[in-house]
Length: 57
Image (cartoon, rainbow, N blue to C red):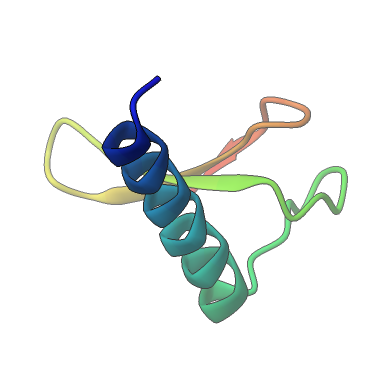
């Protein structure tokens, strides 16, 4: 990977960590903080736990 590609990847990782810290979300099923925010078909926002797969809104 090129230096600029590594820098871009590092910047993206830092943004993700910042977003996770700011949101302070945890899965109601397993308690994991590995949560992704997703947009639904009708524009609503839902969350998915990347550890156990639980979905909620």
